[in-house]
Length: 218
Image 1 (spheres, rainbow, N blue to C red):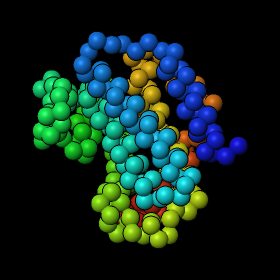
Image 2: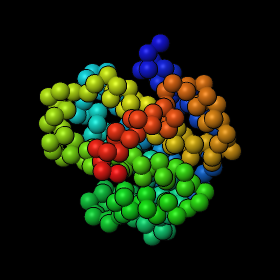
Image 3: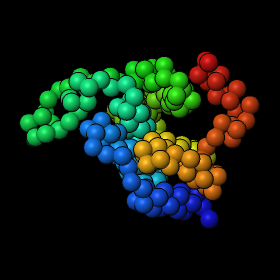
Image 4: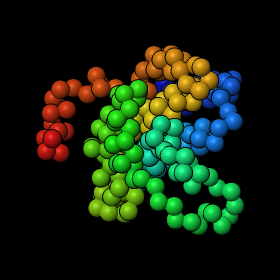
């Protein structure tokens, strides 16, 4: 079974679990968190579908948006002020055109790093931001990286890494959802059953890590 098929099976099982879960409700903040999580998961489905179609620049642009959606979900839950929550609500069409100032994703990650409860997740966000966000920003804005990817595409390893990282963001979003259904431990079952669908720290050899760090002057 290839990684595409495995990943879609994983997401099907996750969606069934979510459908059978009763999420805590009645709070505006939580409703916004859930929306951010579901949007991030939807982007992941699109990322894999676009990869199958070899639409690589679109894949990477959407991959960045998926990442930002899950970061925002955690930020909305744990750091957004009540005033910011109210500004995120959309009550009528006219409000769609208001320019409401919100923190950039880098600032959200900095704020999340100060929360001990999710420090490990925030550090994963920071790691991804360091290695990938500048590159993905260039993709989104049709910079040099997008022109290169449009010409040469992605190697098989790069494509597999994108799928696995995208699946990782799905799991982060799902963990937040399941936490509000009293089922946060279920995510460990998902990781164990579909281990090959995820890119873990132990999957990166010391030599590869050293080589990558040298490229980024780290």
